[in-house]
Every structure is written in structure tokens, then in C-alpha cells.
Image (cartoon, rainbow, N blue to C red; front, side):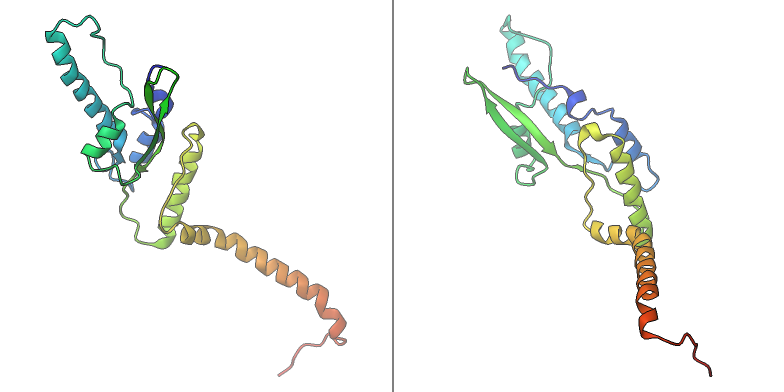
Length: 188
């Protein structure tokens, strides 16, 4: 099995999801977005050029055009001191001919934001990000924030509070009449 790399199937560098996230006024943009794939593709291409320079000088007939692949992912992560950070999850697949292929299972994409000091504003910003991510379900992206449970409470508290009040009123309406024989209010 030949190792191949198709950015469109992994996460395209010209992704509309990425562009929309980086264009939000609350984000710092592409300069502070941590997407390992950008640096990896540069690294992979440079390694290819370095290896290919030796092949060109020896007039190797196997000299082929550059095709990006995941084969250098373990080396890239080690050299960039990312191998212990769980930013990229991958495994090595061996086929019948004992050739191995690196397969990337998942990776982390960090979006750095600014200007939301209020819990309420941050909660609704995270909700906007979640809605944006839902539009691009083909990438199987999930949004993580350390304070996500608090944000979820802030977002859902209005609906849950209304439910609690309505249930309480309904229960009191049903349970109150048997115990109170006189429907007279308190007078001062």
C-alpha cells in the first residue's frame, strides 16, 4: 500500500472552517492559530528537497515530483518536541509487503481568542464556535474549553429555570387544594 497524503481528506489548509474561525473578531487570526499541519507540510517538503538533492546529483531514475505524506510525522514531532504533547495522534500501519505507513488518526487545532472577560460573553462565543463547527461535520471537530461546563450552565440556565418554575407552579396547583379548605388570603 503506497503512503499517500490528501490534505482535502485530512484538513485542507484553505479550509473555510479554519478561515471563518480565524476571521472572528474575538480571535487573533492565523498568526496565533496553532495548526501543526502548516509547519509539517513545510518540514516534509524541505526534507524531500534535501533527500532529492542527493538523488539528482546521482541521476537517479526514481526521481519523482514531491507528494506530501505522513511518513515523516514521528520524526517531525520528535524534532519539534511535540511527541509527548498529544497534539497529533497517529499509528503505523504495516501491509503484507512489510512496508509501513503512518496514519494520522486525529490532531489538535488551537484557536487563541481575546477580549472576552465576562463569563456570559465567553459562553455565547463558545456557542458560536460550536455552531460553526457543526456546519463542517465532515472534519469531525469537537470544541474544548476548560470552562465549558460553566458555559453550558450559563447558556442553558434560562431554559432550565423556566422549566423549574413552570413545574413548581403546576405541582403547587395540583397539590395545594386538598390541604387548604378555605381559599382566603392573608390580611394585615
